[in-house]
Length: 192
Ligand SMILES: [Fe+2]
Image (cartoon, rainbow, N blue to C red; front, side, top):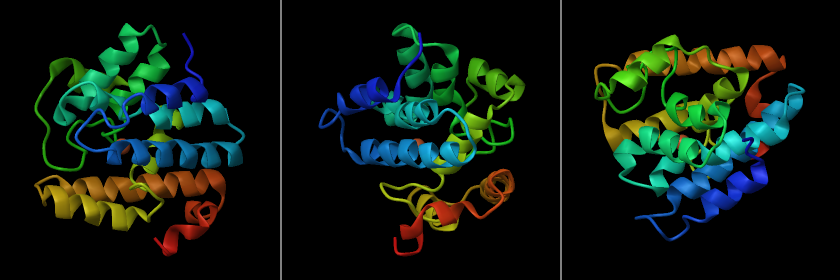
């Protein structure tokens, strides 16, 4: 089953005031709206890009934040949504087909997740969501500011420099697709 951005936003908003804070919800709205802006410029499916952004962290609504990747995937699969929607819960935290290319230290090995990330061919939508995830707190911020924000909260780890370098490469890839600096789409970014 396809997931529209309207339904995705409904699912997201159903968790308002149901978890320890709503920060992940305002962040997810920022990711969806930002992804929509990029998708529009690339003549992609804007509604799909928004839907993926709205639900990428949905696992935070249904269990421990630390397990949100698998919980979100299982939640959307159980509701009957197509893989292209459920998969965003798995792919959004990991760059470069590598489970270790993530913020906040080396993740625990969940064999299904590790194999999925290794073998999955990232779609352009998944790349856009990964970049937008790294350009949104609850508002648009530069990649560098977001990465520093994550480092302050979650510390510096053996994979931090690797993740930063791959994040910068991802931004370059999206800039190249657009033909201009992605920050130009977000005029408030330097004020935030
Ligand atoms: Fe996120």
